[in-house]
Length: 88
Image (cartoon, rainbow, N blue to C red):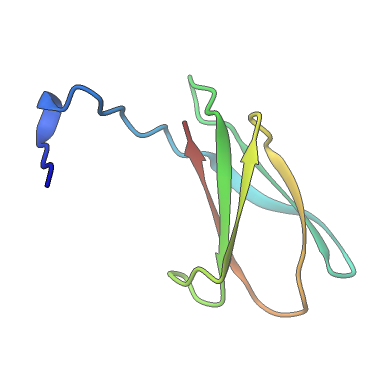
């Protein structure tokens, strides 16, 4: 078992800043185009989109690399709660 607390953990990296302004840019049939702004002052390796049927629900996720800030996803009709976060 390995436990690490505070800054003593030499391998720990700070979490990247959160992306901002997640928005729905277009809906055509079942295809939804989402976009967001990269975090201020950093370029993450990628992002993860998570979506579900309630605010804390995760019914699925999509990993995006190369600093992409736009995604198109196909969803059946319904109401979804979508969030994104940066990863390094």
